[in-house]
Length: 389
Image 1: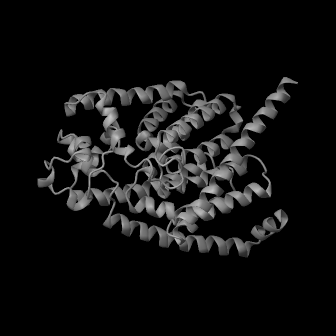
Image 2 (image 1 turned 45 degrees about the vertical axis):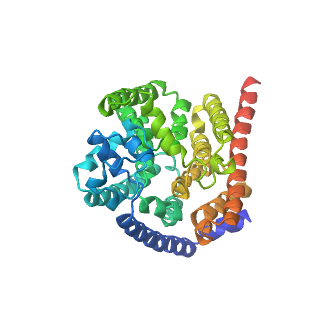
Image 3 (image 1 turned 90 degrees about the vertical axis):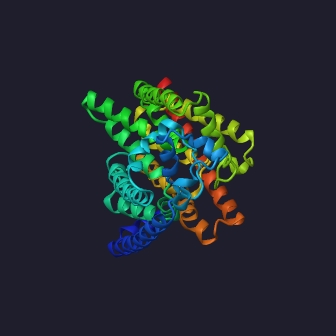
């Protein structure tokens, strides 16, 4: 079977046909995503940031609308306010508030297209740099052709923004000039926390790389801005943390495949997430430096299920290709990855995310995630035993 698949992809005509088909699908997906974004972009949070700049507490207006913003007509463009980001993160979008609501929306669409291009370039320079050009091209087109990317763009979500800056932080971290590396990494980490449910687990990669100072400084900057935000909004420092969590907590059980769905938004979901993060942290401390491709694959898979995520965030699983670039894997792993990609990128959409399709996709996803994680742990233990001998 393995030889058959290799020989099939080795046929130039097959490669060209597959890439051409993916390119056509990606073009259609991209155009539809832009159309949807121009009409909706409901998750952009321009309204929350605008309220913040006016010194109106966006968290209070999200939890208990007072009507004070009705005169501005924000809801004519962005429907209902949901300020679920911490204030230091909302401040990152302040430049967009210099424009009218619709103009800002189009600016956000353009920005996400730039972030998309940046993600492709940076993946090619970091975790997927050893991939063959044809394989890399196929996976990038697959990412754009899939439902997650199209929905991400269409609803104006922030994962493209955050994931781009995470990859840029990885790229800066690999620079030889220490000053440029430190500054660039810190700034990019600071920005990438915008989608913290996605990037905080991914940033365990920097623990694995022993970049403790860079992480610490990037977090301290947010602490400083949070203190400023409490003064700016005339609220307590504790509320600057608690209130955003209250807004986001309302969605805890409404994700796609995550723990919140499995445990129906109960506290058990948070306990499970904490346990997994603890295991991933231990793995970060154990792994040797040349296991980065394996570790980022494990982090990516878990990051999408330990906390609330809808299907639009799953476009990042293309990075798991790195797991297959670092070491030759059996056909079973490849088949599992292929099944997960097909289910997440296309099958869920075909069946309108019906309970049955989510159940099947969830089983495939969790089985593959556990298999990859156990494999990485097992290889690490085996390596440790060899070194002891």
